[in-house]
Image (cartoon, rainbow, N blue to C red):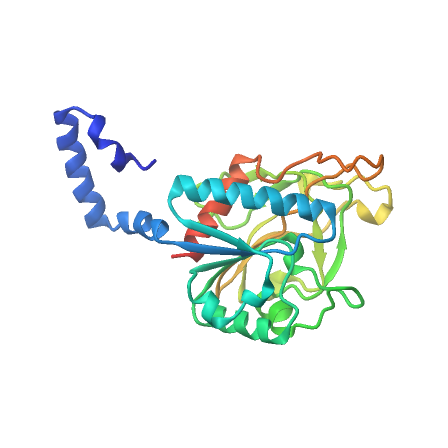
Length: 284
């Protein structure tokens, strides 16, 4: 709970001091952030049909965002009906989240593009940026992959899901201000992309894999273990209110057939803080 809401339990002399502080906050313009968060309406789209690791993440994410909404006062709703991705439905929300996939129908894609171009907010996780031809999610949406995300097609990934040391590339951005220079992520399957985001002036990389993480991944295939290179994992596009997170793949015990969940994405304070600050920023 915000400190302002605890005034009733304080003595009179403290009340007077807090009253002056309250007026100072108003003058400084800090309180509107709290008010905007309390009026924020968020909708999450997901599929949760294929990879057990992604299904585990979606379930965890919906539970975590619901808890956060109750604590911070914003509205959080979910849907697996992508037909809801239309102008009328989206007009009710300030932020859209793609938890594990993307829209495939042309009319849904047009509705989302228009939503973003008209000031909507977006958070995307992990598989929401996956595109590979040939696959069930081909690289056939030029605006989304090449302009909006800027990364182009999926190229490769690490395996197994492992934690990584992440370097905060920009500590002056509103969503990274409270982070240290480096944070340790939850276990994740990390993606490599077709395009080098450092060459795109419209893209602002916020976090990347720190070289101290190498070798990253355990294999068993040699190409699933990264030994060098530059890999952005959180970024935004300067023309849009959006943040993409490469996180979103929980570790699952596939090998022994138990399919037990071995890791969780949201059991990480620094990473959670980053996501909440991103939600506030895109929803502002």
